[in-house]
Length: 444
Image (tube, rainbow, N blue to C red; front, top):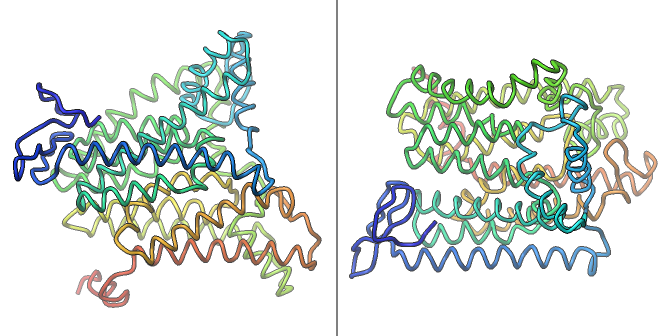
């Protein structure tokens, strides 16, 4: 991605004469006259090496030092579905499947060496390798987003923070979330570099991989209106999503309409309130500590209302940003993702993979934020894998209500969500004060 070529390619860096005789950089049609190509190459190589090293350390430290486990459950599920493909079973048609269809891209690729060597671990290692490649692509995108917004030093620091995000690295190795996250970050990098349609395509592919990248569409549309109208951008999105839906969704729905449940599953309508959610944490304080008669479902309704209000406010902020700054796009996307994660009634620890790239881009300018970022990573790593099974499962605390273990678990999740919210506020707080900023946005 960063190799210089004699023949210019609009989508890859190229060599140009820069300041002090150094070769400057061109990337996705953007020229950086004061950025040395060799420095960028060196930065990216260092970051890739550090990222790989972090993952190896996590694989060693988790079982050896902390006597915990590497979670291969999801990889086993992916393998089972790969085996079902070889038996002629078609997902969504012959059986229900919880994830959108593009998850079968890495599953099918990883199946090839497993069949060639007749070895299940060949599937696991190949799948992990593919997720690491996706993560490296995310890392490179982070670097070039930061390079566009800030400078070489901050771009390297943003990449370094991401490369050493050890909790995120754990889930890159054990889940498939690195794939849709990569597509979401690609959508952002294309958009910031002025390639709107490619951004919409990446977000659309992300939706058909794991739903959540779809949250980017309204924010990408509003950002792109700096050079067009909302109507034109909505039409552009339809030009992407209609063909993708006709190819990836409609045939399945024609054969088996019940397959739409795959996309409705993301609403959480069919699951209970998970105990590692902010919803259940608040419920435990109200009911278990305050002895207030209230159900988790009632708390959940309020939380979903807050989610809607928060997303609407973020859209309003994105609309009111007349300059359509890249930083505003990053902040609103980050907050939208975290709002969906914090306010929903079900939660998986790997959701941290979704928003870590945006955190890394927005904390690199302040050591205080960087420290908070790694505190959030520590909490996430303790939550899973260290505490899982011993202190909680998806639907219950393992210790009885009122016991010391119960209170310890409640305090932990309380502190975890507080740390995340403090970090987000540190990122988005206006320099001139919140009240003054709100007054400025209210029309006189």
